[in-house]
Image (tube, rainbow, N blue to C red; front, side):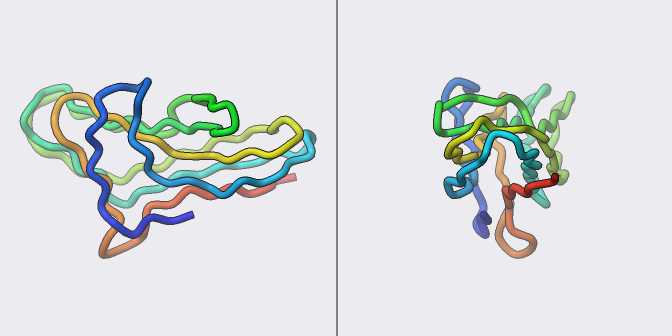
Length: 129
């Protein structure tokens, strides 16, 4: 799944993050290994606060269950900062249907995930063996 627009991250709470990109529901056997990968070519952190950060968590929306942080970027001093985000998670999902979603939240200043004008933000899953 891809997002080819810029996303402003406004949530400041891990308990209530902003949706970024979702995979369609897929059915798993319970024995296959799956690799889930998140990518954003440009995460832009606002520059008005020291200790600014952007955190992307991976969720299994059939719980819903927060599976944990898949990508994190933090900047310890005041000033704007931009960098790519990438993370992957290898798992063996329980038998049945699962729908995965990347969700983000921020610390301090405004943050934007840039998906327009280049490589889209994406979340993908692959059976690996």
